[in-house]
Image (cartoon, rainbow, N blue to C red; front, side, top):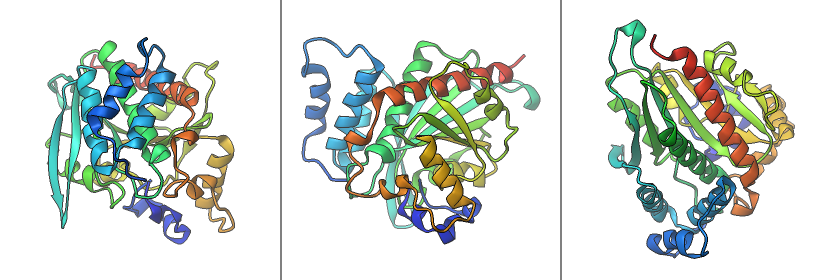
Length: 314
């Protein structure tokens, strides 16, 4: 999520914004990945441990190493992926693309195979280590990919992307959107998804079927849901701007969500805690709460499956 996020006067008209929601390491990617498999004699058995391990490694990796590390994690999980290079103005980057479920889109326009696109930006700013923005989003996306590989959605096409250069103005997602020849059924973004006990879900419409599905998640779930009609700029805007349906997930404490909502409501006295954390030297792995993230990943997975059960071709 970009620093421009702090400019309240600009963000109060965030509907049209196009900006986005740090300390380089010296360890080689292969060494970082090896730590995940050799640091202990027993394999990682819980999602929480996997989250912590992956966050730590992403944060030790420098900016250039982060992309390579994500590719190696995907390789180690047996998940096929590819790099797609792009140029936007003077900037060049590479998105990681995963064909999670490569079901061809068939059927009529009214009854076409649903195509779901999942995304999280993998780049970070130089300050800090990019744990919350957006290491958490990347690790959550990786876990969701693995869940879908183990339990696929029937008759669905699912694509996942780790976007590059979000922090420089949504460049990776904008480049990807320009290549689309078909219209996705829905784009689901993950940004600043690292701690707290409230899922903050953005959608342009409160009555969107995806929001309604989120409201149906198990009532005993440890996380609460808050709908956002105003939300910080992130990669969902590239899709929304091109006319594609898009939503975005964040995970935060309720008090910090309330601060953001007051800010978007025009309160110029509010300085949300999350904006005092991201893009600073304090954005470190210690800020991430693996247990909360595990619950958040489960909430997203439940929401996606509930929504899809209503979208499945008849």
